[in-house]
Image 1 (cartoon, helix red, strand yellow):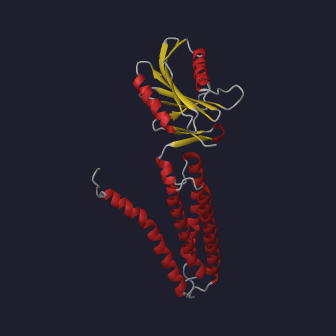
Image 2 (cartoon, helix red, strand yellow):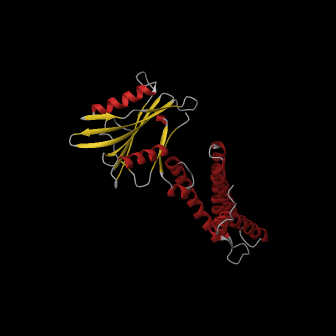
Image 3 (tube, rainbow, N blue to C red):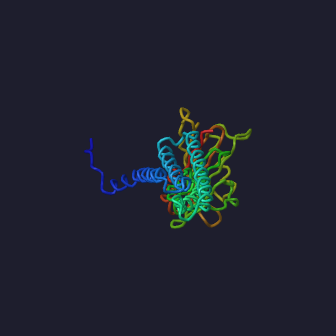
Length: 305
């Protein structure tokens, strides 16, 4: 058993920053509520920022819960709905407060707090923009956390074809319509020069039902588009005890005119869907192609439909 190690200075700083967020929000709410109780400010102007900070506290709680319970979709929707309602309440309170503020006499004891209402209104508008951005990052990157979304790989998720795949760093998505068979997703990269395509066949009367049939289909498709092809012996994995019915992998050496390429094929059958994860590159660098195939395989996953 390895000895326990004490947290590093960086971990301590990260921990302090993490938990200082709710502490600052709670202190801010308490200060604005205290100011409202003194009667020295316009009540709506001073309550508006307190309400807005409550909304930010709800967002912090939602981000924490999304980390621990990523599949609790109903709970997440409730929190985000609550956040929007709080923002609307804060915005309305600030607008009503500003209307009353303008009517107050300049020397009135309640002719204070206008700047808080203005700042709250602007922050509420920023909050709505942030919410819309979070919807985009949820769809594209799989998280409503914009910071995480901007620091992680782009997710491509096609529900009707039952899969998702993350685009690795240094890989670029390209149009694969000229490839045979035609993929739904294609990537490429330089240094070394490698390519990847994901071919999906939906359930249908002509869809392969056995992994052996999918292997024959993949090999015949490659033979039709090539001058000559040689295949390695497929490695079939029976996964009947899991969600995936079966998978297989084989390699091929493909000639097209005066060029020769090395391919790695990963095949998956899942609930009637047939997936081909095809990675290829120069024939003189098979190790890079194999490494890229491993990488793409780790980025791909089927969806529980």
